[in-house]
Length: 70
Image 1 (spheres, rainbow, N blue to C red):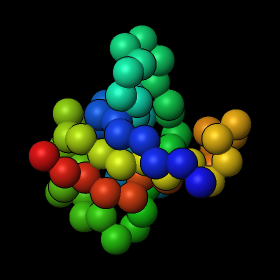
Image 2 (image 1 turned 90 degrees about the horizontal axis):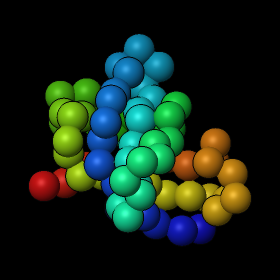
Image 3 (image 1 turned 90 degrees about the vertical axis):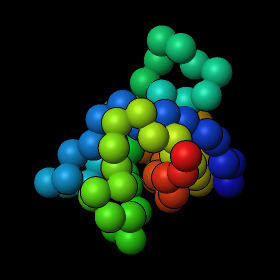
């Protein structure tokens, strides 16, 4: 398991997924990242810092946004 910092680039409240730019990566985005359901949609403002947990470092589909912070 690996924790990474990121910036929220978009949020889809319909299926609770996000596009995230990982810290240190200025051109690449992860899209369709699952968002923990305990995070209120109102907190998912574009540009917020997020914590992304990777259960499998080689498979981005196994990632989940677990927290937002400022």
